[in-house]
Length: 219
Image 1 (cartoon, rainbow, N blue to C red):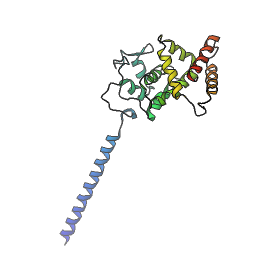
Image 2 (cartoon, rainbow, N blue to C red):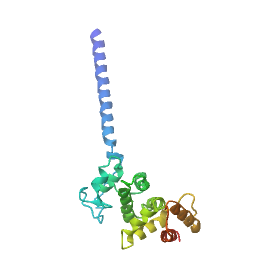
Image 3 (cartoon, rainbow, N blue to C red):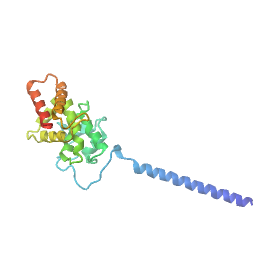
Image 4 (cartoon, one colour):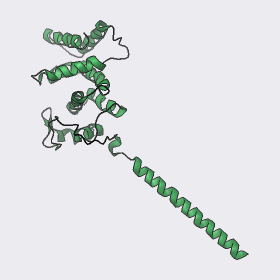
């Protein structure tokens, strides 16, 4: 009888140990399966979605606004999403991660802002209907917050293609919650007021450019 009780107890211990091992193993697998590098959502695609970007994906060779990409991605404050965008590991789509990436363009960090602006500009270039919903507001906010910088950036493209792309983006989705899309004049007034406030000592020519931009965006 004692032997039977002992054997029963032994089998019970073995069963408990096996269940605990299974539970631990599953937990480890789950943790490994759900860890994402840089907390970025990755989209697998066979297409080279960066085709036309003119990239080598070698940070020492590629440049953004006169500096090698290495200058930006080696900055410990550089957003991981932006780095993944440059490396082609994250492709923008209609999700919150894309929104977070594009919002970086209005950062006060002047060292990283050109890199984030590049990310926004490239996203505008590849946007479709769904993605186009995400670019307009950050593009407008950038123009409003850094008007001189915005026009300097536009002037870097002598073809005027960049200006037209940004205007189209703002026109399509650059509406704030307070905006009534049927009242273009009100939207233009808010936009020009904000830009002129942030354009210290603007001359008449710059004010004219601001007025034209607002009219082009919200005719």
